[in-house]
Length: 157
Image (cartoon, rainbow, N blue to C red; front, side, top):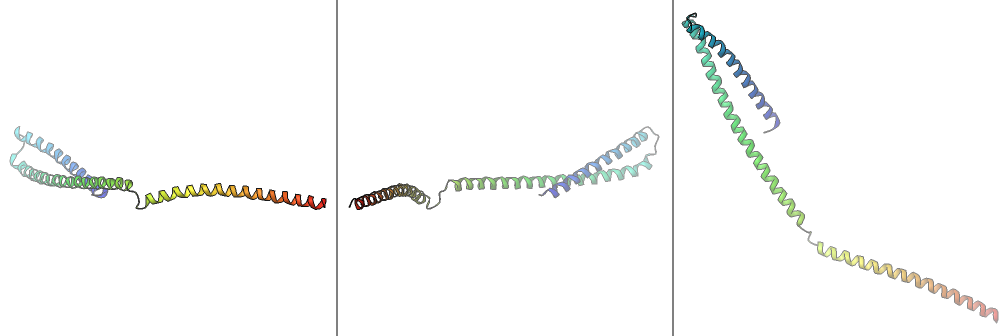
């Protein structure tokens, strides 16, 4: 059931309560009439017709209210059933989420091994690149030293 249905049911219950209050007030008037009849101040035959009408009206109203109560009880059971179904669905989905969170992708182990190998190779690359730069600088320094020696030897000759 949605919020509109619940609102409508609430309004129906409120209306039924107001009708019941009206009937109770009418019953008080009838009680006063009955009291006058007992005291002998009222013609019983004249007041019997309205009393019968009010009794019939009250019985119809009671029957209507009982039907509404039965309908509301049925709707309440349906709502509880819907809530139970939704709670079951939520629990099932939560279990699935838990299971899915624990599952590793098909190639996750291979991916992690390759990633570790990549880190190792990159470290090796950095080391070799630094060594190559150092060797290049040493070679350049040696070439400069040889060039100075050759220039000095040429000057001596």
